[in-house]
Length: 256
Image 1: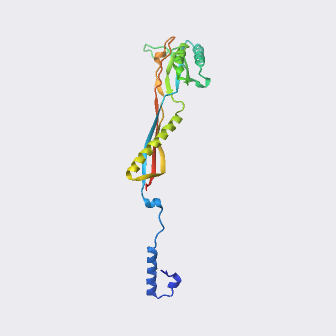
Image 2: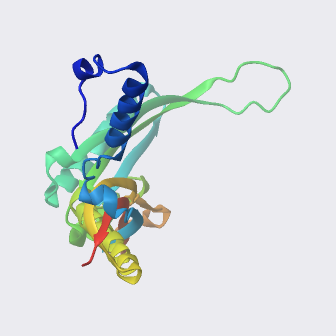
Image 3: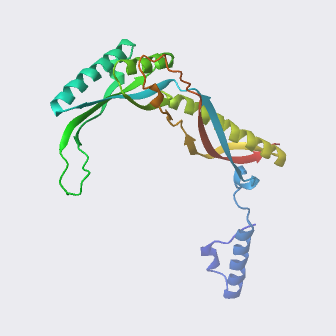
């Protein structure tokens, strides 16, 4: 069908020109539009699934804080006695194979000790002596030696052990395993739903991590360790769980 051009319309009479213009516009409207993309015309939509993964791991290190508390008449005497005792503790810790980089001074302080005022005179209490506290925080990377180390720390002069924190030295490696399990779990669920609906999973539209859980240090009190010449202290590290969650969205395609 020949479509009149604008120059050709000029030579037609007004009624004929209106009719020809209307016919031309109608022909343009009826012309086929460019084919839409196969993906858009398919219209299968998307599917979004969440997956969780977890890995159980045993702690492979412990952190202990051992202190020496010394009381004397003067600050100088208390400091001298405390320094000698904490030096013995550190020496004993190193003798068990702990490296210097895993030993750190912690909580050094000097406090005056006051008399107890029992009358109602309102006077200020006198200083009766001084107390010096000094400790070390120790990273124990061989848990087999932990029980023996605790006993030797007490035997060498530590009179306060705040507690034991069991930890996983490299949780990131285990966290990556949990992430992989989370992705597989999300895909597994998506494949089940897609198969039931008669479609296939296409490419991933988006993927995001919605949460992680790393092991928290597990505390163990140690008041019962304060004894002379104690036998190796029994300790159990237990297990910790590292987990991750992901949300993934896929395009859906025809399974034909």
